[in-house]
Structure formats: C-alpha cells, structure tokens
Image (cartoon, rainbow, N blue to C red):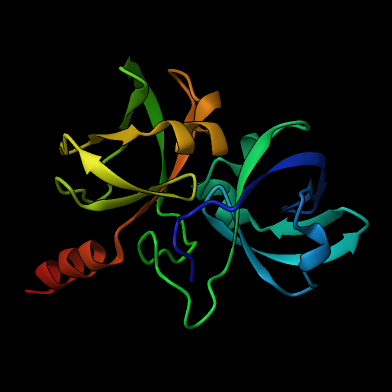
Length: 194
C-alpha cells in the first residue's frame, strides 16, 4: 500500500528483456535502504526488488504490467517516480494507493497559470471513473481531479510537485499510468452487480 507521495525520482540505467518479462535497473538515492523482496512503486506500479548492487537495484515487470502501464516505453536515462510502501502508523499524506495501475492515459494539454500547471489527460473509458475533487494517481502521484469528464480529467500541479516528480518531463502525447480511486472502483462494481 502506498500514499502517492513521491519520495525520489530514479534513473533507468538498464533494461533487459527475458522471455515476456522486463528487468529494469534503477539508480536512486535510497537504494542502500532497500532490501530484496521489498515492494516499491515505479510511476505508480508496485514492483518487487529482485537484486541490489551498489546504488542500483533491479525489479521485474511481468507481461500483464507491461500491457497495462507505460513501463514498456521506458528508455535508459528516463526518470521514474519512486515511492516505498507505507509503514503502519505513518501519516497518510496522499490517498490509499495500491500500486495496481488500471490503465494508461495520454497527456492532451499542458497549461502554465501563474506558477502552477494544469495537465489534462484523456483515456479510453473502460468503466473507470473520476469525480470532481476526487483522488486519482498519475504515474504514482496522488492528485485531485479537476474537470472530470467521461474519458478525460485535469489536475493542477504546484511547483514542488512539478519539480520533484517526472511531471516536468510531460508534454502533449506523453503516456502516463492511472490508478483510479479504490472507493470509486468498488462503487462501480457494486452498481454493475445490481
């Protein structure tokens, strides 16, 4: 379980395909604090640490995660939002995030307004919903929805988030990971069962 509050950005140093899996090696300032078998969110995707060597650690991405996320688009040198799982008893500064990405979206607009930014994302409506002022997780970042539509939404980004996540690299056409709010997913499911 995560909060959507990004700790650091990691740098992709190696990508290796093996069968249908992708092994991503990352350099981060927190590598020495990690351990093998630990869960870490990468652009919002919960992945298990499988190797550590110096300041570099490696995670495995399976086929299903490659199909539902933007991790298959990564290149060496790319920046990835990193968050370790939360500890029991910590403050929950974002919202409850599972690290289970529902689908991807495309950035369709970026507008700077007096020192902050509005990003608009469109996505294929697969039954996932956003609500005005509700929570959404974009590339692992816990955010508040603005301008909720059936297949798009916007988020407002403050300078701190812009500078300390990979949002500063987003442009029109950037593909991002979305994890919709778990409560909204339960409500949709309950309505489908009626």
